[in-house]
Length: 347
Image (cartoon, rainbow, N blue to C red):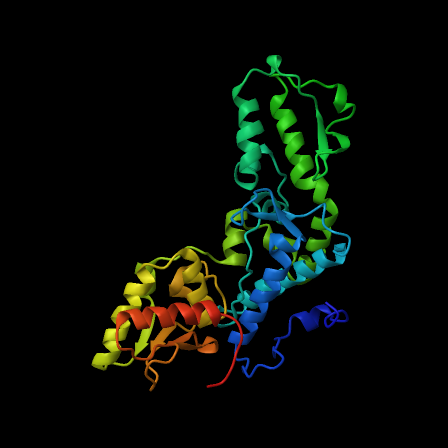
């Protein structure tokens, strides 16, 4: 943020050339992709608290955090918006320049980026625990038997009541009935998903719209916007096999190639992401999957035996040496993508 403090819009539109300190990688695209991946991990990982997840596990969708720690300011959201805008701008230049955002945003956040008003149905994906425990219960039950008002109580982490927020004027005295319960649920969604993070969203949009005007974003729905920004984390082995390139035809290499497909077929989604990160510099795929990777995912054979696999992320190239047996190969591949998915060196 300090380095780009004085950047104009035209500076942001220029091609960035990245150098990692004490690393020998040359930036022909792969180093830059890894830099964006690391920046996005820092900005959008719920553990860092600029964004948070309504779910307790790491699979939750992230949303601006209105209770972030004091050292995280509104300017961080503006910076995050500019990073997303830069990724979208790069992708618009063509597949060779594609930059994907490493994040899984809440549907209500994506909706607000394109100017949509949030409603209670967004809770089903964004906050499934609240959906089951409260929203669905209210929808399916008689409100005459419940004493609920148009007010929302907020508690601290240790269970202390912080304040009561009225969702409509004089809401603490307005009881929820069967006739107005949908109005109540929409008011609750408006407060929890939009009003409580309005400043954060406004600053994020300030950064994003500096590079990508809002009239270009509003032509998409939230699902299309997510694919455009973040690509997909869904991997198909059939798609992978149909869209890759191979260099090498020796008996030894054909044997290693068979081992590779055997190993990859048993990979988890996380391991596939690590393989992509190791080979391309980005753990996500473009919206169209492997078919849209440019250059294609390229598997080749280096003139070495028993060494760890290596990669050239600028060319999406994976180099697989020969091994004595499948067990050695699989161990080396898993070690390479786990321990070598970040950082660059020359061999």
